[in-house]
Length: 259
Image 1 (tube, rainbow, N blue to C red):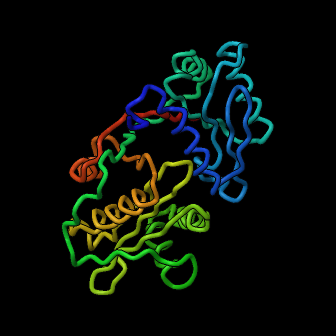
Image 2 (image 1 turned 30 degrees about the vertical axis):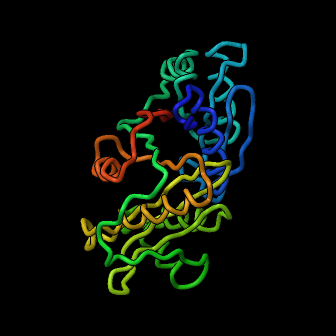
């Protein structure tokens, strides 16, 4: 049976989230919550957040008190991800009573359930795994970073993700021009697809599909039992991934709450 077809898929997903975000911060586990702190990427929420919130026997309000104290000590605002277990234990409600509220929007946790990668739609797109140094790496970081007001932050995040030993980097080319990016982070028998980006001029040309196809194929060859990603619910990305054969496992398995 596929691991996600069992009722206990949440714990392996949490474990892989902790594995993946090691690129961004140090993990501290307590009975009440797991905390990530990243001083280098201090302004990146995923590097500084609490997850796997659990009632350790003291009750939901005491758990929230412990989380708030943790963040007061580090002089950072509370960022906490509430999963279905934490919600059922009343921790989500206790956070909201303290003014730590869920963010707007919805994310879909999607997995690829098939044993072979989907066919590519544009064979003109060339996909390469690129080295973690040199000119192509800098192109990869620039594309992932984008060009909005937060571009410098996202470039720092991209550089840290690229340096993570478990990460494979992919770049898509059209006529020799780098036009898209993707990454695959493998460990604990799971493969997470991230950093799927296409240069604006080259969208709707099969670039993202080609990149994700390559990441899926490599994840399967590596023997990962689960290949997954997160995307905005109801967005263009979700439609693209459904067309490729992905399926939604859950909406908002981690509902982010902010102070």
